[in-house]
Image (cartoon, rainbow, N blue to C red):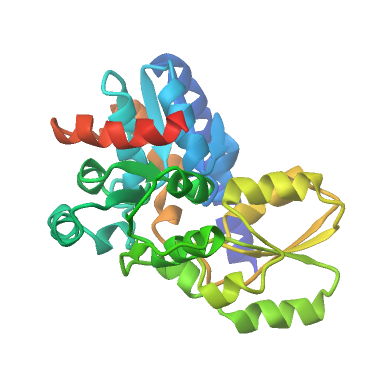
Length: 312
């Protein structure tokens, strides 16, 4: 027990040190810190702005700071760099990838387009810059329905088959779906929701559209993380079952202290999202690296797809 107490005290001391360094360096570098809703609690707390993919895309596009520290995964920092070629975009955890983004590449998408030459490509923002560059327009989990609805005719949707399938169902139309998925959301099973409903019958169920179709079918509402945060604030319900990555629970509880939130499963944890630490943020501010850059012409082509989304 004493050893645990000593380790906890040491960790608290370290965190205080790195928080002080971040505060000092952020001022010196005139930097803004962006963090995704799935980031560790202490990273969300230190960020200037926390949000989902769409919110962070908008914030990056409007950012005036010369330095953007992006606390998320690689494709998110790439998106910020695509929108801000004149800014220095830093990813504190450069090895924080995305398994779903890795499930498709540019040659594969070009091959699929060749089979459907009349189709337009809607690309989920959870993808590489190269894939975005081969697409007509991007989308996020919060605006996929609106983006697809704006396109007449045949649509290829990449890379998430679950978000694409949910969108197709909502719009009552067929989409050509890539067979990609998020392993974290795929771990959420219908039985988890059913068990929690029995234990908390008063709770509303929020499900992220990256979840399996049979999980989404059990939801009271299917929402992006940003949507979950907004709905939790305005809902008269006092308890919620949350089917998405566990990091969102921190902000939900902070913003709604009188309400109860239950994770669908503690296994819904993205290891890549948890690679960011306070020390890494401080060191990235000190060294102004690792810097994320997207070469031309990939950047310009990818930017067109992102800007079309933002214009909607």
